[in-house]
Each structure stands twice: as structure tokens, then as C-alpha cells.
Length: 336
Image (cartoon, rainbow, N blue to C red; front, side, top):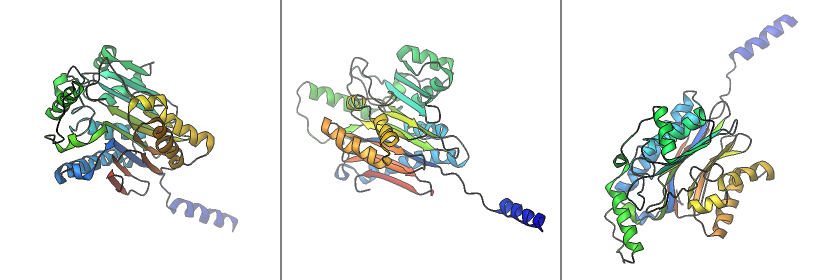
């Protein structure tokens, strides 16, 4: 009889469905004074479709058993290849009229990270950041040294003209004209140029079925930037951070402030050491600390349970997510 009971128990265990570990992903495509009245239906639809495709590509990696890092790269690569976002193709132009890009990626399981700044030829900066994480003893490479490493890693290279678009060229011309004191009308040729103070960055955070969190961020920086300026996106702890015991964060905003406030790490530290929920920690930093500093922008994040959170103090933020139930959400405005 005892043997029969043991056999019955084993059969129950064998045929009982095993609950799948949670997976989730959240992305952003930049924040700023993004107002519906400044968007045409066509432009808004294009952004929503691009955000949907990006997050679904990342989620497909997770569904197939891929790692959170692979999912983050897939989502960000899509946005880097889209001229809609300020990352990769379509990145903003420096004062000299060229594109300089930054990116970073971090894994929460061992706090390993890779970052690149001021790359001008690598087609997908997030792939270069990932190669630095995987194959370099260093965390960050910049400029010509980063380009040489990218070639050694056989990453796709492009002439700088590949990244430049007419829309970004016009934006630079307007920025330089304003700098010289010109008074410009608000009727830009492209309705997207009416987005005031848009912080152009893309990023993603993912949780895989092994319970590992990864976060990544990529950007072209600020229109009309000079002197090799680098913002928060490649700075571990400022624009990107991941720790399996706390959270994963990707940020978008005025980089100088996000560096000074160490935004991504500050949020994770509040979760880890103050036992705050991720939403509460993010709001304390984004809605209070950054506001007190006079900075705007936002973050997306995930906690170890796969809870998706957003927090932004600007009028809008391009964002999308697929939660642990598989539900898709896409938003642009505060009311989304």
C-alpha cells in the first residue's frame, strides 16, 4: 500500500502542469513635451507601430527561451534601425553635422556591463556595447578605440552619412539659427519637430525565464552638441542599471542631470536598501528629486517579479511593454 501511494504521488507530479517562470519586457523611445495636438494621425500611428514591433521582437526572444540580454538587444536594434528614433539611423546631428552615438547594456545576475561612447560608424551601437561586455576586460570604450574594437569583433560598419536624415539635418539648422538669435516660427516641416525638449533615447529592460534582468540604452545624444559631449546613456548607474536583487532601469532625459543624480542606480538602491516598491522608488527619483533639480525625462523598469513600471515627469514618453501575462501596452501621452 505505501508503494502504491508513492507511485500515485509520482504520477501526479509527472503529469501536473509546471508553472512557467515569468518573463516580461518594457521599452522606451524617448521623452519630452510630446503633445497629441502636435502629432498627425499618420505620425502617431507610425510611432505606435514601431514601438509595438520593437517590444514584440524582444518578447519573442524571451518566449523562445532566450536571455534577457538577447531580448534587450533585439528590441533596441529595431529602434536603432528605425529613423523615427534618436539612436542609430536617424540619430540627431552634432554642431559639426555628423552623428555620434552612445550605448550601454548591463546584466543583473553578475553586474557585468559594456558601454560605448562617441561611436560614428558602428551600425548598431547596442551590439558594440554587448561585444564590450562579452569580449573586453573594460566596461567602456570611446571614439576611435571603440571603432577599432568593433572592427575586430566584425560588427557591421557604415559611413556616417548612413545615419543622417533630412529631418535631423533640418533640426540642426533650426538649432543653430536659434543659437545665433534668429526668431523662428513654430511651423516646422515635420510635425515631430514640434515636440519640444524631446529627449531622444531608446532603451529596454527584460526579465527572462531564468530570473535574470538585463537593461540597455542607446542614443544619438543632443542636437547641436559639441566637444565630444556624452550624456547618461552609456554611463552605468546613470542611464542604465540592472541588479537581479532589485530591478532593471533604462532612462531617457537631460543627461547631465541624470548623471549628477545617478538616476538608474538610485532607483535600484532605494528598492534594495529601503524596501520600496519599484514604482515608489522610481517616482521618488523622477517625480521629486529630478523635478527639484529642474530636470525632465523618465525611466522604464522591471522588478524581479516582472512588474512593469514607467515614471516620467515630461508631457509624454514613447513606451511599450509586454507583462508577465503576455499583455501588450503601448503609450505616448500621459493619459495612455
